[in-house]
View: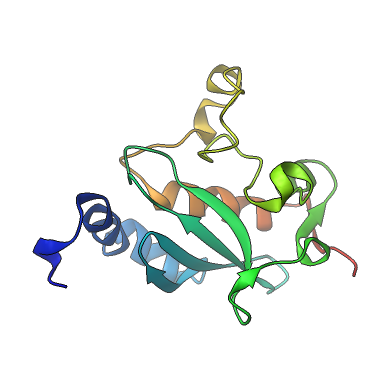
Length: 158
């Protein structure tokens, strides 16, 4: 399908994936594009211990609506089992909580599903809210920061 025939939300996502912001993160080794089969994008994000975590983003209505991300097993192309999610001391286990919404999204203010019912986050965590101008790079950057923070404690024990 030629780019002119793509739906507007997919076209915008593809433009953001070609942006300097996305390319800079990829060149720095922070993340990589694994696949894009509309409306899902799979990205790998590298943690400070060298572990790459996969995330499957649902991107319908991009960038007007926030995306939602689910930890993803890149090799099996399936949801990542909870015992393989990232862990840590405080922030990381809250954000990466396999018990939250049955592991279908992250507990972050930038997530489409997590923000629902958390209006207080708009005032408490404005820097972590979805920004349609930064788009997918904003969410990728937040995940990368968490996985590379001193709070990150590696992969959960099986």
